[in-house]
Image (cartoon, rainbow, N blue to C red; front, side):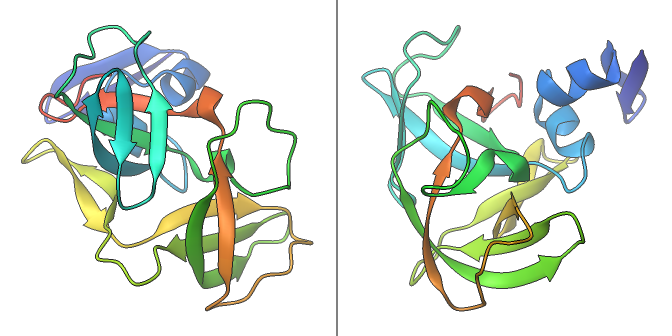
Length: 175
């Protein structure tokens, strides 16, 4: 077991994989894992999380404690973002149009930094404990197979693995 402490307060005490796979709040989600989880702000209406900038539309009606008009933060780990048509994803989101910003070869994988083309979209990363929000970044991060052929400036279609998406209350940061 590991203890994750923020500003002297215990956030989560659990086996490392539990902290990684089931973070109790935004701080733990952003702290555990490298590179860190990225976050997208959205809202719930009629049981669906929507983010108009990315076009993410997810049914969250079965999620506990999520009501209509709730502000929700969606958490996405780099290994849960895929090029459309790559990977064996049984429960993928609809395609999301993004643009390659930076490609960073890491040997066994490519870290591909993505941005929304022609948009003021800000993804979020690295939870800021002072104001209980995630700090802004304009990039989503995808961990891809090193054989994927992409380059900076290239438009691509991505999908998210719905089974690996994390939802947090935007006000409290709690899962």
